[in-house]
Structure formats: structure tokens, C-alpha cells
Image 1 (cartoon, rainbow, N blue to C red):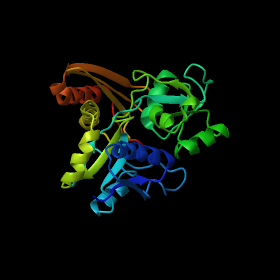
Image 2: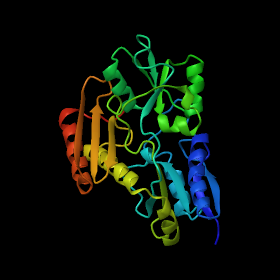
Image 3: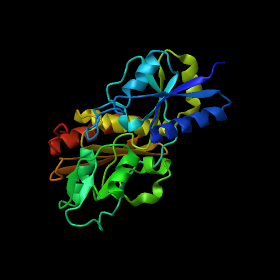
Image 4: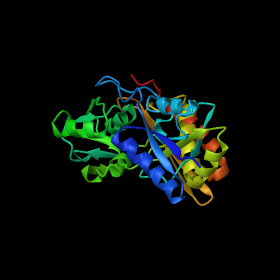
Length: 294
């Protein structure tokens, strides 16, 4: 049997995430190799924001061209409009879905401190809690942002806890923000392992890595976002938590300036998750004018 080829971006975090999947497949006694792919997001001009799906499309192209057998993505980066010939064959175990502050806590950040983030969701939720803070659009990978913070180019960062933990940078976290304070992006902390829809062998192998509870949670969170008509960069957060035969859905939306905010918590049986997601999304739309991010 030929080695399974995993398409991955070449950033430190992307490689760590791909190696998590590689290790899981090797535990199944499978031969695996990594295939680094450069995405448009990796070579974009410094200081520019990534568009929706920019980190995903190059890996999908490698799959469709037969240059790789599977691809590992951060689930939160996956566009809502799926490539029809590809499928997420596995959602492995999820890491901490929360956002984190680096450089200061919400309480200790000085008046007028600059929030270094390219996420209007993160900025809006933080401005709701601390209207005196200033949004400082900041781009780049985790290491780049940490260097900018250490150089005094911004005052605090807000990053995914999962990314910092996976990079071994959890010690830089000043505060892990609760989902009620800053509701995570749909799929945050989860990995999406993609394969060709018609590749039955690979899909069957990847089924051993799939966590049904993570799949249901991520699908539900993405359905909340879809119900609002947003994209993965919209100022909308959602976190679904599965407990036994029930699911709880927390969803929240905010304007970019933090002035208008609404959240909703719904609970129901697992089979009701799509309905709960749709109801949550519609309620957010009724209370928050969701403008496309600048």
C-alpha cells in the first residue's frame, strides 16, 4: 500500500497540526508523508488581511489534482461553500476552542490599549467589554504577532488558545477568555481532515480518526454562521457543546465597534441541532446589523 500523502501549509502551526494527524495515522500502522503546499495567504503582502478560504484553496487544489490524498485544515478557516468533489472525512479530537489574550488581561490592559488582531469578531467582542480599547488591525502568523507585541508595536494580542497551545506557547497566555466574553469562531480549536469524495479507501481509513461529537459541534457552529448569511470572517461566534444525548448552542454577534451585541443559548436533543442553529442565527440577525467586515 502506497504512503498516504498529507497536504499541509508550511507554517509552524500548520505543520504541527498535520503532524498530529500523521501521528494518529501511524498509530494505525499506516505509512504517511507530508506534502508542503504554499497558499495565497502565505505569500500575501505584509499588512494585508486574508480573504475567506485563502488558506484552504491551495490544499484543496492539491487534492483535486491528485498531488495529495488528504489535507489538514483549521476547521474555522473552512469556507461555508464546500468544494463538491471533496469531503471532510474526519474531525479529530478538538483542542481548547477559546480565544486568549497575550500581553495583558482584560482587567489589566491600560486605558486606550491597542488590540492587535485582524479579526473583527474578536475586536468587536472585546470593545463591547472594554469600549476604551482601540482596534489595531494586525496580520501575520502567531510568531510574527508575538514579535510585534514584544517590539511594542501593539499592546495586547487576541489569538486562538488552541494555536498557542499546539505551538508550545501556552505560557504566553495572560487570560483565556470565556465563550460568554468572546464567543469563538465556528470550528475554532478543531481540525478538519479533507479527502476526495470518491476516494473510498482514504475515507474509510480516516473514519477511525473521526469524533462524532466534534463533527456535530462544528457542523452546528457553521450552520449558525450560515443562517446569518455571514462568512468565516464575520463578527459572529458560535460554540456547540455535546453532553450525552443533548447539545447546547451558544451564539453571539456584535458590530465591529462593540456597540450592538446579542447572544442566545439554546438546548435540545442531538437531532435538533440543525434547527437550533437556524433559530440562533435568525435571532442574531434580528438584533444585530451584520455588516460585511471591511
